[in-house]
Image 1 (cartoon, rainbow, N blue to C red):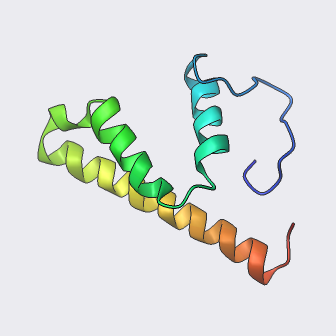
Image 2 (image 1 turned 120 degrees about the horizontal axis):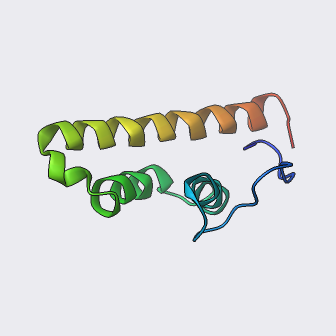
Length: 85
């Protein structure tokens, strides 16, 4: 899904659709932005109310942001070193 720009046969990405559509829209539009793991952390922590859980919510959202960074690093590695368009 992230390596190629083809549309999947299923739900189209939509910001105001159901949860799966919203996640696809966010991934499609924010994956290429610099600092997108930090934006993802802020989205999860502030918009999705992760701060209401206190320290465990902070740790959970931080881990999700770090995981998003690792995903972007792996995609970059695949594109650069394996010459995937």
